Amino acid sequence: MQTSEKSTERSSWGPWKWVPTLYFAEGLPNVIVMTVAVTMYMQLGMSDTEIALYTSWLSLPWVLKFLWSPFVDLYKTKRWWVLSMQLLIAASLGGVAFTLNASFWFQGTMFFFFLMAFSSATHDIAADGFYMIELDSHDQAWFVGIRNTFYRIAVIFGQGVLVALAGMLQVMFRNQKAYTWSLVFYGLAGLFLALWLYHGVMMPRPNDRKNDNMTASEVMNGVKEMLVTFFTKLPWKSMLFVLLFLLFYRFPEAMLSKMTTTFLQRPNSAGGLGLSPQEYGLSYGTIGLIGLLLGGIVGGMLASRDGLKRWLWPFVIALTLPDLVYVYMSYAMPSNLLLISSCLFIEQFGYGLGFTALTLYMLYFSQGEFKTSHYAICTALSYLGLMLPGMLSGWLKDAVGYRQFFIIVMFLCAITFVVTAFIHIDPEFGKKKQEG
Image (cartoon, rainbow, N blue to C red; front, side, top):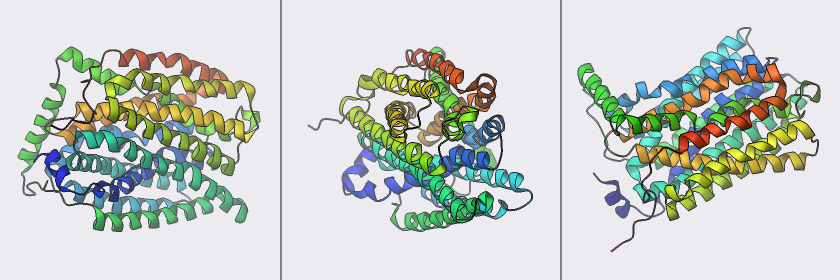
C-alpha cells in the first residue's frame, strides 16, 4: 500500500487531528525523564556528578529500543502500540508520584522513571512508524516542522510550566519539595490518561495489521532480516559514515544538555546563575524553547521547499556556533533575566534548525522495507550518542568548573562538522513533487 495514494484520499486537515497531540505525547515523558528529573533530583540534594550519571542511565531504553522494535513492526498495529504505551506511561507517572514521599524515594522513582522510559521508547517506535505509514515523503518533510514543534511544546510544558509550577507549590507548601513534586506527577498521570482517551477516538486506523499468531522463530527471522537490511543498505564505508553521523552529530548537545539545567539554577557560589524555578521555567523552559520551536518550524519549511541537502550546512552551523552563549554567560554571570533569556533564545533557535537536519536524515535513511524498525535503530544510535557523553558531563564539569567546561564543549563542536562532511543525501529528498 502506497502512502502517497492514501494521502490523496484523506482530507488535507486530517493529520492535524493527530500529529500535534501524538508528538506532544511523545515529547512529554522524554523531557520528564531526561530534564525535569534533573531539576527534581537537584532540589532533593544530589550533586551534578550523581545527576548526570543516574539520569543518563535513563536513556538506556531509547538506546536499546531497536531490539524490540521488530515486535512493534511485526505484531499488532502501530495504533495499538501507541495507545497501550500511553496508558503505561500514565501508570508510571502515578508510580513516581506515589513513591516520592517514601523512605525508598530514590530507588522507587528511578524504577518508575525506567518504566516510563521503556514505555516512551516503545511509544516512539510506534508513533514514528504510524507517521511514516500515514504520510508521503513530502508531507513527512512538511509536518516534520509541526511534529518537532509540538514535541518541543511538550518540552516547554515540562521545563517551563512544570518546573515553575513545582516552584510555586513549594512556596505554598513551605518548601516541601518531595510533596510538591508528587502533586505535579499526579497531575501528569491524569493528563496522560486524557491523551490516551483522545487518541483512541481521533487516530486513524491504517491497514497495517500483522499476523498476531506468529511463532517465535518467525519473529526472530524477521529481526534478523531487519538488522541485515539495515546494515547492508549501503557499502560498508558509506555505512560507517552514517553510523558516525548518527552517533556524533549531537555530541556538543550531549555534553551540554544536563549541565545547562544545573548551571542556570545552581547558586552563584557554585558557579551557576542562581535562577529560581520560576525564573528557570520562564527563561529556559519557555522563552528559550519558543526559540527552539521557531527553529524547528523554519527548518521544516526550508527543507520542504528546497530539500534537506540544500540546507544541511547552514543547519550544522546553526546547531553548533550559538553554544557560545554559555561561554559568555559563564564569564559575564548576568543577573538580568531578559539578557539570559535572549541568550537562551538564540541558542535554542539554532538547535531547532540543526535538529531538523537530523530528523529528516533519519527519515531519509529509513526509507524502504522495515522503515519503522530502521528509524528506531537510527534514533537509538542517536540516543547512544547522547547517553555516553552525558554520563561523563557532570564529572567533567565538577573537575574543571562551568566556565572551562563550556569552552571545551565549543572545541568539541568540530566533531559535528567532521561527521556531517561524509554523508550522502539525495538533493530531491523533502522537496514537493511537481505534478504533471
